[in-house]
Image (cartoon, rainbow, N blue to C red; front, side, top):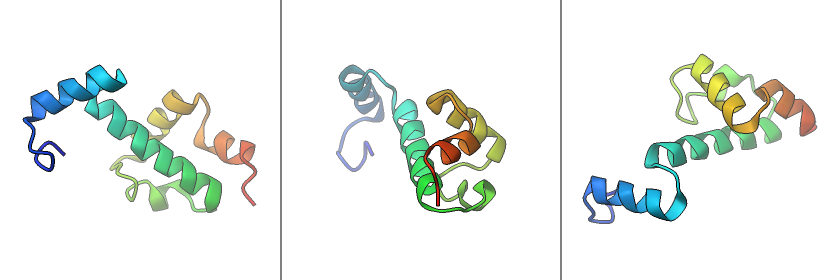
Length: 84
């Protein structure tokens, strides 16, 4: 991303933190989890089938991060959002 905007990576990281209050890593994590949440609401795919597609190499780590961000499991999220 820094290369695309012709910024030094440290400068871009500091700028993102200043503007959003979140680090690049945190923002990337939110992006991945939000993409996963959209898939959970739209499709009835088993999580291991799409977790790599959204950027996770470990299903266990995905479950941990999902619960950390949404304060519920992915199963609870899917049930609450009435997948049909």
